[in-house]
Length: 193
Image (tube, rainbow, N blue to C red; front, side):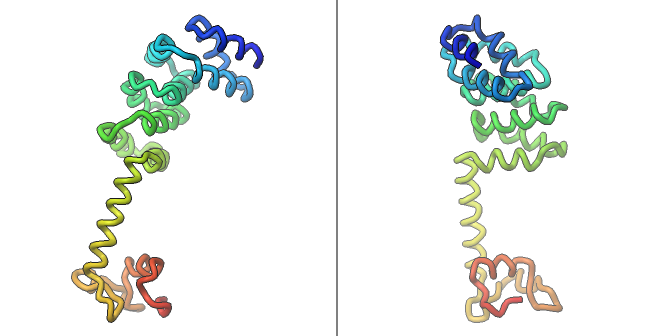
């Protein structure tokens, strides 16, 4: 681990191969130290070398390069990272989703939708986009639209939805699927069952 610090202080692409070998090491402490050093290593030449290696890497090495590109915010690596969402290696896909969450823009959403349609790692991709500030703003806007529409069609004296939903109910209990959410939001009285 001390050698990792020395390689980092050299601060050039000549130390990149040794640091990358250490970053893919199964020894967790060594791997984490090497990834941290590679993240801090200065220079556009380091970024260019990561992108170059990413084009041919596979397995754990590809996963590590994607993680590093995300940490270093290497936007030029994004095309290769987007192709990795369909990789056969689950670790590579996970790293790709996370890096796209860091580097990606709204226009990168179709690539993730395509991967989701193939049924791979849906929850992981959704979690990554839910963490993005832009994704959170969009979700908030949709929630506000949804609850505004519900409020516009809610009949307060009877504490029930009016309109088309008023006919969508459980005959046994007289409630619909949305009523559980209305109850949780405090819109229905305490007598809701």
